[in-house]
Amino acid sequence: MQTRVDIKRNDTVKVIAGKDAGKQGRVLRVLPGSAKVLVEHVMTVKKHVRPNPQRNIKGGIAEQESPIAISNVMVVCPTCGPSKVGRELQGDKRIRICRKCKAPLDK
Ligand SMILES: [Zn+2]
Image (tube, rainbow, N blue to C red):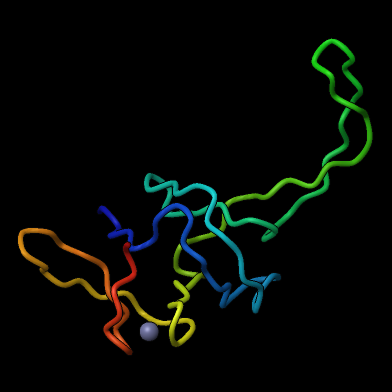
């Protein structure tokens, strides 16, 4: 079954479940196949990086985001906060709107 994905890259989302519940961040990547998104500074894991001078990588600990299930995040409407995403036909285009205040989410 194909999950309908209402989230796009660069959306701001709020985490509603999991260890990072309450955090907000920008969507870096959408992974429709696994119904997950990569959100900036959310679900970070610390990775030990080996120095690699040839690729100009310094060793140490780097933080990396791991994907979070789309069902655990909500799109944040710029006007009224976290809300559900609706769809509306504008001309011949389907645009995403906030279901609370009806403001368009796509520019
Ligand atoms: Zn709204």
